[in-house]
Amino acid sequence: MRRSRVTTVGLLIPQGYFGEFDGWHPVKAWERMLALAERGRALGLGSIWTGEHVLSKWDPTAMVFDCTTIAPALAARVPDVEIGFTVINSTFRLPAMTAKFAGTLDAISGGRTILGLGAGFKVSEADAMGVPFPGTGDRLKILAEHLEIISRLTRAGHEPFSWSGDHAWVKGAANSPTTGGRDHIPLLIGGHGPNVTFRLAARYCDEINIDHMPADMPEALKVLADRCEEIGRDPGTLLVSVGINPAWPYVGMRVKGRQRMMEQADVPAIMPATTAASGTRAEELTAWREMGIGRIVVGAPGMADTDESLDELAEDIRAAGIELTPPAA
Image (cartoon, rainbow, N blue to C red):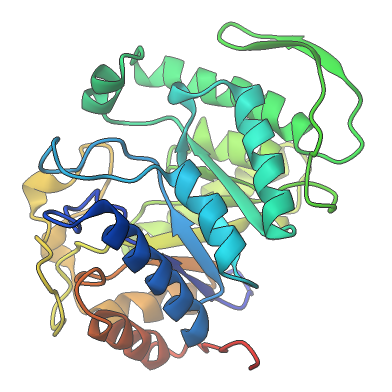
């Protein structure tokens, strides 16, 4: 399935998950995150992204920043760009409170929020935070119930409603502000499951971030189209996005800073990816563009350490034939 869509690029800024801020003063780390978001905007990256991890990947004592705190600060300081999440962990939060947060952020940002949600995949994080970590099926049921509630509470003009599921409920729920003034806040789901995740995307979401390698994506897109058609939705109305991992060992990268790069043993079991199959970053970006992927969320090693990392990333984006349009002065 080929999707005819212009590919846009967003920047995933470091938060500490990959150990980027080991040894940093917390204030200096925040200032660097802000500077990277501003520089990404200046380069023409149209969205800034964070995600929810409460523990660093390799060192549970390392400094990691909360995405729901970073995002409003970025929204207030960095104009024009969208503010997105890949993704907020639904098992950590009450859905009505997530909707309240999203509506507030959309007002702060002037209608630039993309609310990404997922089921979580790290039992170590759940244990550390003192929250249950049920099996995959139950976590996906929790996510489905959250999407039902959040999709209604982040749509302008909704009437108060009550709803009850096996894992979440609301009674006489209303949310104001629902948005920063637009019809609804775009919802994103992260994952690659063809039976549950793809159906949830088709039913509730504006965007799906699929964690596949390029070789596996064409078949996934066919299945995703089928899931949309099952409910009478035009597949072209569902934006497909992918990610470029900031610690992925692409061939030929010149700038890595202090970043520890992933090995195959570091790849989560839920992700169908192999480090041995990696070519250059520009080649993967080209593959996504030629496939018609709507958005690529890119990170790069060494961003915390040097601006040269972002410069090299921008070179690879342009080499892939993807246009970057800096904002007007």
